[in-house]
Length: 134
Image (cartoon, rainbow, N blue to C red):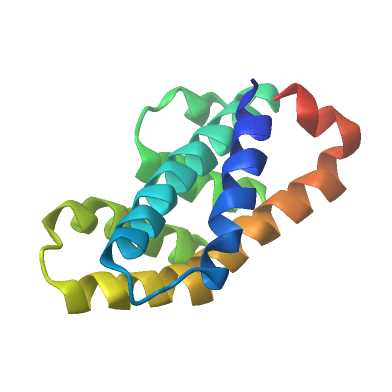
């Protein structure tokens, strides 16, 4: 599977999280894990697209650098929100408190999933069928 296909497939599963039992700790943990994967797929997809566009900054392996450069290339990308996702991803390995995990899931559902969906939609508009080759 290509990066875009992986991104879209994982997003489909993550987007169904709002229909799950959010009082179940196992479900909470699964949503956080799926978010982690979705974020990784997202910034790596952006990196691949920037390479395709000939952007030399795509050679950087840093998610922060890729997000900042992608923001310059794709005006529809919310840099602040994506940097917030990066911070959440980095911090989530230190979540041991159930309340903090539930708060994170609330943010994932209300802010991050819509941002992932918007990226998918905008990239499809921008690249059309070509996006499936990435």
